Image (spheres, rainbow, N blue to C red):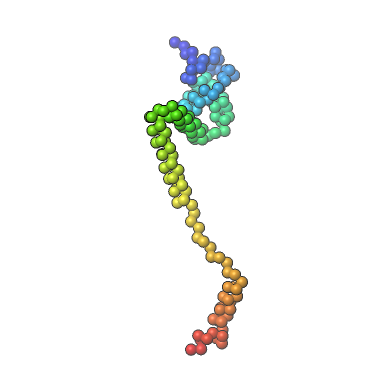
Length: 162
């Protein structure tokens, strides 16, 4: 049985797997699907093979021309997926879905705790500076110099007479 559609549900072009342009045109739906698959751990090579395109073409259309490394692309895909789920939860909560409201409250509380933990960690990691002593003013300098002269001279130091 021949496959008529790729893993995203798009029709497979006639020149699938052959070099040269195969007419692959990404749209918003396929971009989201590819990024979601990538975020869930499917390797780029597998995604490209299933779409019938090369990995450089996949990078060009779905990963900013390959300028993102794997970790950054995965992080971005996870962030987009998380944002999409939050927006869907918010829509459901606005319609009165109690489960969505509870899930949204739980998510907000977890984010607040994570932010608090980050701020505490940042405060702990901040280099602790010792406050430098303030520079002496002119009068203090002159007084210190005079005291040093008095201490060093036997005739001027009254404590040395005893």
